[in-house]
Length: 192
Picture (cartoon, rainbow, N blue to C red):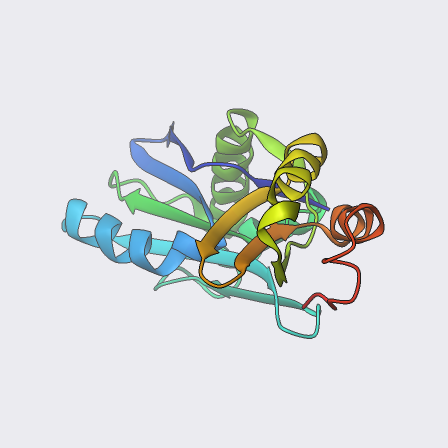
């Protein structure tokens, strides 16, 4: 599976209709959809498709035709996301009607092609589920912990100095396992 590193967009025109497609990381999807509706108040349709994982690592999918004939807009966009094995992404296609009807086949092609064009500009990367881990260590272990975090390229989300040093880090499970095997204060902590 693959995911998106940052939002991409493209504009696709067919028979005077304009299709403006945005592909968005899923965490930002709802906010961006609301912003795009405000930016394009005269658009006729705001078609969407999403693929994400729930807390049980099950794929959740949704789509909306937003007034287009049933299954001619959101469903073809969802099929593009599925075909590209994309996860944790959402797509919005804003349509300005150009006065010429495209027919059901034309709509299916237009929405699918518009999303495919946007994905050509996307910086996709392999999807790895990120886990969060908290642990505490002594002050004399900080240099070793920081060295291992840097070596493994683990993102240090938080480090607090109290009586002991409290860490919160995020990384794929394999990297957290490597960290636990190389630093004693980490080895007893399960990750979520």
